Length: 109
Image (cartoon, rainbow, N blue to C red):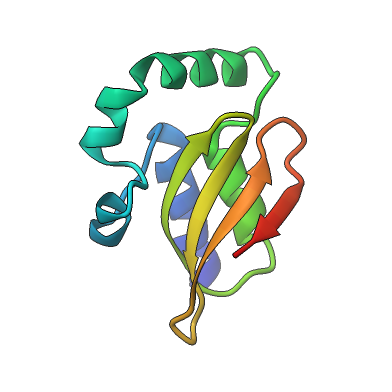
């Protein structure tokens, strides 16, 4: 059942360029305001993802979800990286930075 929910979430994320929850929108993760500011950058990111030079945000989220308990609160591109805001089961919230070209997790804070 959990696997089915994760798969559904991954499919929804892959179909949506930026996903935001209420908390994520307040913190700059996704949301309309950030899309209006960096729309040109988002177009370039999408083009690079389509050409295979950069992972899509959906692929980045799948990498973060792999073997990690909890739930995603939001995801946003940040230059050559993507930052996934993640809530662990104990309530701790972390920003996980992923290299958008290699898929390697760079850090978590």
